[in-house]
Length: 288
Length: 260
Image 1 (tube, chains in turn brown, orange):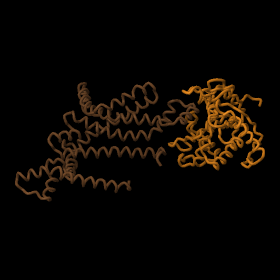
Image 2: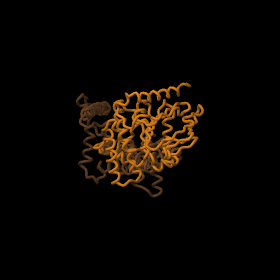
Image 3: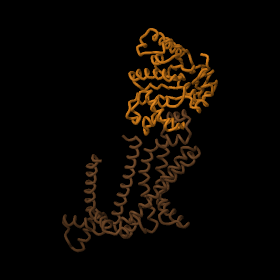
């Protein structure tokens, strides 16, 4: 952790510099327009001051986004519709439910594929085909169809998350469950082990490193799914709703703060999986 | 040699069908292994020595002839857990401790917890690894890992030990040491051992019977009964008797190659 602290800080610092410079460059047109109309003269100082403090900038400066995040998290009641914590929680709950469902579905499919030749031949092509459909196209369908059968709220969004997150779990777990080599399988045979014993004692533990890697990808995909799922619902609540509402009203600062929040959420969730991975593999003796 | 042989093969054949036509991995192989024998199989690559061992273990299906292990078919013997098999690689599970790895077949076979613990302790002592029960495989050297894998094959009640080049990947010094240990272990446990090797000195040093094989088709060219005493210090390898047997093995190997 400590060794990566300074490199990470350096990269963040560099990004901030580029961001501030880009803000000046992209927002300058508006500053010049305003100046022409009021007849003011634009100096370098006033240009920088103005481009970093516009109300609806093309690219808000980092401190504007930070201020927005501060005022919509710390300074708002979390039950308020204007609280970013509230919206994050809406998205998070759909993400976690979808992630859970996707992990279960993906693992079950992988077990089926590894143990059943028919499933291996028939299911895998569909699993891959499912991911070639643009999620933006299919998400409204899922919302509409589920609404028509009376399911609304959390579950339709979670289904979209599941749709994206089961895929890496299937692919990773098929690879993981097949990772024991022929010698290890022969060895089980010499002990006359049953298929169930081979699964629980050899295949499943051997798949754990693959499982956790899949989970990290699945978690990120699940968050994207939940945000996409919030777009066609009419932007009621959630980070996706904040993004959509922001783009309706040209609230770029709101869009960017929702984006940063989503990124922070993803980093947090993937980080938690990483910690569980480290602890589990260490307990299993697979990490030194 | 009054009792029935432990392992008996009668004109055993195994042919693999490939795109380039049939490959005779084994052809008309007949051999009896008596109880308490230490039999080594030696020969160049492709002579079918490992295939023969895998037939005994019911890991390959012969296409002709017959084979009995403990008086029953190889498949029945496997299901009765009649043998322990040691592979070339130790194949220990990295997520299990040494003790946990040795316990693995015992768990599968349904031994009681108390019995498992007693057996693990006993076989660890047998391969001189007492005190390493709670270590993980990566904390042990290659030689120690292979000893743990032998312990695992000894942990359950099988009278037969099948070993497929168990020391092939280890260096000469470690190999000498393990050979000595294996002989001691064989004397203490009175198992019947079938041992596949590439090394002439190893075969002569360990065996009561050396089976020389040759390829295309895989067959037995010579069976040499060792005249060495059961008590064998490492120095025995410099005696004329030892060199005489080694010479005969080498002659046998050369004869197998004469038709190439």
